[in-house]
Image (cartoon, rainbow, N blue to C red; front, side, top):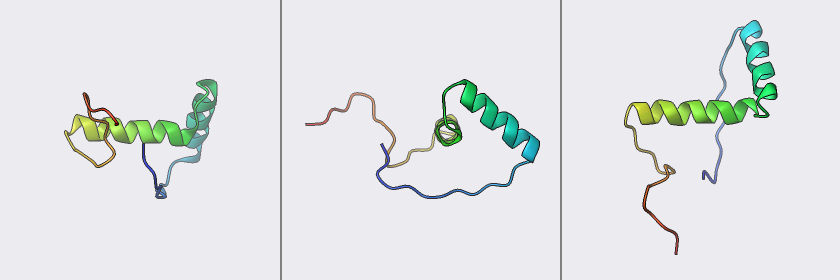
Length: 61
């Protein structure tokens, strides 16, 4: 899990923003949670590694 956060500011059509926020509410998710998941999926789709990516088969001791 990330320990620090950074702000990402985007411009979006107000109608799409409202629809997105309403859908997130229906799914009991915050817009930030959904955006973070979309970013993780995009990075994975393009085989991009990053420092906080979970490694399969690793354990904490």
